[in-house]
Length: 294
Image (cartoon, rainbow, N blue to C red; front, top):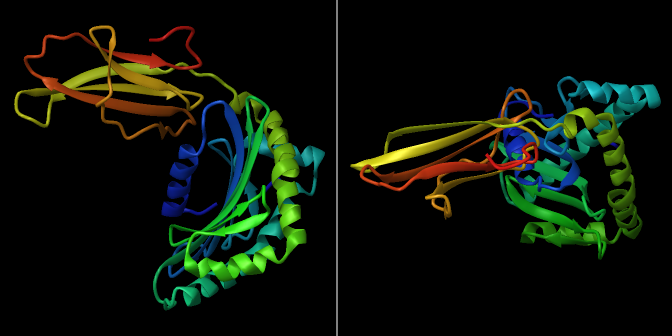
């Protein structure tokens, strides 16, 4: 369907989604997570994202598919049964994942007493040049398990335990043909629809704020220079330390681009220099909201 986990699972997924969102493209992605041995957390969770923005969530405790963005609620004006249909799909998938976790336990000769996860990610991408991409893959306990190659309509087993699944799924040619069609056509149509509804949020441009501070470095007689860039949207940005106006410093430490609570982003980049260093250092920022570099 144009189809989350609480706690640590959702955090992991969000970080993963951010790492998969290249500049100059839009994507629709769904993550299904089935768990075993995690008391206090739902056994089954679905989260859906357009780009890096969460649009929906379902979990096995509430048994409801709910909107995570105000503009997603507008879909019911055009499609009154949208959320009910998604709820039914999610509830029908839930027992399949429960069985899937048990099958994986057997394949890997594991007992049901430990903590185990089965995850599925599928979706599509629409690039600025008009080309598209589609993907469908599964992971078990955080490791690749099996993935769909839509061009050949075959399944690629990442581990020996997935070979049985590969042969079983490749025998169902009608399903694989339908999956290819969904990823290349229907998924893209849903993505375009969501982008239309969420245009104001998804395509907004917010200028970054830049701050620089220094502190003692990790080595004796060194200084750490940190450039903090925050409050920007969209996510794609280039931040670099420049020495003497022309030398880009490639040894900067960063934790990457991180989300802020208001839907914008932040990034920090730190370099260490000698306390007697006489060079001039500047933090340069390039972002689509800026007419010229900061």
